[in-house]
Image (tube, rainbow, N blue to C red; front, top):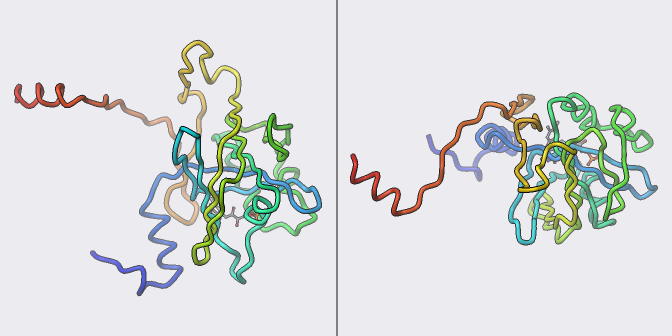
Amino acid sequence: MELDPDVLTPAQNYKLMTCLVIPRPIALVTSIGPSGVVNAAPFSFFNVMGSEPPIVVLGISDRPEGSPKDTAANIRRGRQFVVNLVSEEIVGKMNVCAIDFPPEIGELSAAGLTPTPSVKVAPPRIAESPVHLECEEIQTIAIGENRVVMGRVVQMGVRDGLVDPENLRVRSDLMHLVGRMHAPSWYTRTGDVFELPRQTYAQWKANQAEV
Ligand SMILES: Cc1cc2nc3c(=O)[nH]c(=O)nc-3n(C[C@H](O)[C@H](O)[C@H](O)COP(=O)(O)O)c2cc1C
């Protein structure tokens, strides 16, 4: 089947993009609003785009009437944000942060999540999250109804016990991160893993010879 996004409706394109590209990691992003209120919202149009320097990207769609979501507006204004990764333990609370609360209600307190100071940026981390990436905005590009936010990671915070300080080995089996699956509301755990070692050309050639 071939599908041309130019002839599909926006809703059809959303459905296809969010159901075909799975799983997606989830960034629970904290930023600071104009009155100083801490804002928290989840984004699964999110990933790491490089490591030197460390870069993350968020895809934030505009609201139906065309205004930017609070996270996009806050990042443009304050140029800083924190990506808090989402574990099974806090996935229900993450979902509360996606509610379209009126501006006077802070998502963190409504969800029962705890802000804790960041090391290098003004927006706080979420204490219950196992991994925090403190970011500074590099650039935001408006493409149609999307704002693609590029951020440089300036500090990483990881819960004690998840990274071996000697060799930086990460205990992903203890992080219990979740991923977003098909729309509208399916998720996956990250515990079902398998190993596939990367091969050199010489190893690949030797394996071919054996066959
Ligand atoms: C798991 C999950 C992932 C989401 N991913 C995105 C996303 O990638 N882009 C987006 O614009 N909205 C996404 N949303 C919806 C936003 O979280 C929601 O619109 C939120 O209210 C925006 O808050 P803000 O106005 O405070 O920024 C997602 C919602 C959920 C539950």
